[in-house]
Length: 377
Image (tube, rainbow, N blue to C red; front, side, top):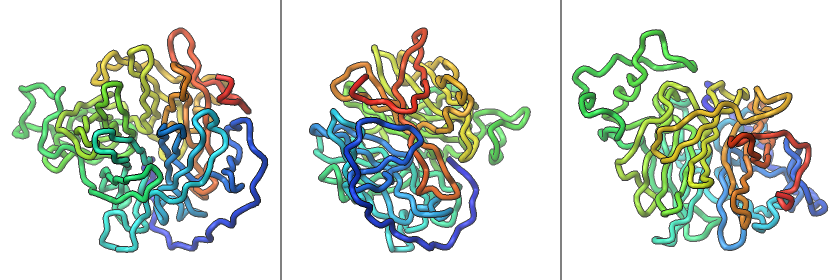
């Protein structure tokens, strides 16, 4: 998400531990989802990782009120047995924002959509996230990277930047790889290009300094190659960039996807040898109709399939926005759509919309369920 909000002073009351509740047996989308301590799970815009028999959930730790639109604590971590996914244990703060005002991740920055992957070659856990520098709104549009020796952390911040500065996307034709006659560009502030504006103009504008990186995910393919997928070019176009074999840097190989479609909140998964995409349009914190697409290659071409949501509130994706698609452990071909129901006036009370991905005419669909169990998939 990329709302324009004023910087607010911080008055934060830390939550008080509640009495542990009874063991849960069902996911109830949109309701308060308590952890094993009886507290609402605080892991928004999250990503999940299967490791050694547990699923680890990483997400933005929110604080009460509108201050929750900035990062004052960091990235929270929870875990659940791989055959459960309903009951979650609080594993603490995996990455803390810094008290140093000169740090890229200083308290009050915007740190969104953390995703963690395990690198078998290095034995490190690698966290990527969307980072906006403190006091700059959503102008910085950077990525951040951190690493840890243990899945729950603590994670050590490595670096932040724009993507692939001075490197041409592989699907920019050779005859257009010049800045001499680059199209004129101006900042985009809506979900449409001004009439007559070249849809690659923002790409050329950012070529030298690096491509913008906002809403994002990380996808690791069957061959172990990892990719960074992110909203770029003032959110007008998604990009996909290959990571090196440590998963901590870009290789320089990247491509522009869905040019001019204004998509964010990307989530990818693979089924039956095909790559599947679910994302959203760009309407700030307000929900909109989800997007879906399929491709034979992760580099495209991608074929859009329309809104996967079904039912009364399909036009608002059940009042949610995608953040991750979780392959169900030990159940090949089964997937869970993980999304957030944002509450920008009190982000700590934002809820989670998790739904099983079902299939209709060869396309992924999201049917609403008041309650359901992953064990029944």
